[in-house]
Amino acid sequence: MKNCQNNPLVSIITPCYNAGEFLSQSIESVLDQTYSNWELLIIDDESTDGSRDIVKTYAKRDSRIHLLINDKHVGMPYAPRNFGIKHAKGDYIAFLDSDDVWLPNKLADQIPLFEDSRVAVVFSDYEKINEVGVRAGRCIRTPKIVNYSKLLYSNVIGNLTGVYDVKKVGKVYFKPIHHEDYAFWLSVLKKGFVALSTQSVTALYRVRDGSVSSHKMTVASWQWNIYRNVEHISFLRSCCYFAVYAFKAFRKSMI
Image (cartoon, rainbow, N blue to C red):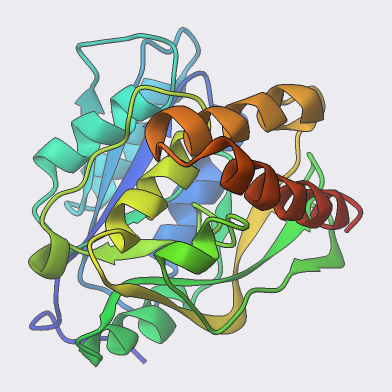
């Protein structure tokens, strides 16, 4: 079912760096959305492959697709995401990395859930795929509802599934740190709202060989930094949160 254009505009932020191998799949997954009132902002972060040309080709075909050039390249994803947020015009802002894929019903399933005045974030389950895109039922399941306190125990909001309501919380930006997506969702929910899950798979997360997220000790240090230096949580409470986080992260990595 196609949505009418009087439905709220959703801005989709896609940072792009040498993503030519997978970029077309990501863009096609947005074009396939049954919810049609969106803009796709692809922020090129000094790519040296043919990524820009791919975006330009799609932008000529569909006026909802826009190529932006990040003018502050720092080699970390927070910068192009923030550049995209700055230029976003939507009532809602969503995120899709250039190697991930949405399923067609994602936005159509998520946007109606914002009718609840308590809800500032909507997210969903997602499925892991391997580098060449093979699906094998490796689904990450999420709780129905989380608030700031619950999110401290584990980042259950997959960034490729998250959407936030600009009307309720204003434009929120990523911090210049590692594990910036987790700190981002904490900062939104810290405003007193909740996040609601569709509890259905709406996106495919590509697990790539040698990705930074595969280095568990490095990621663990980022998590600890958020507890202590971003959220300013006491040492003992941070230890409690970290213990639960480590257990859940291990279980997730086994899927």
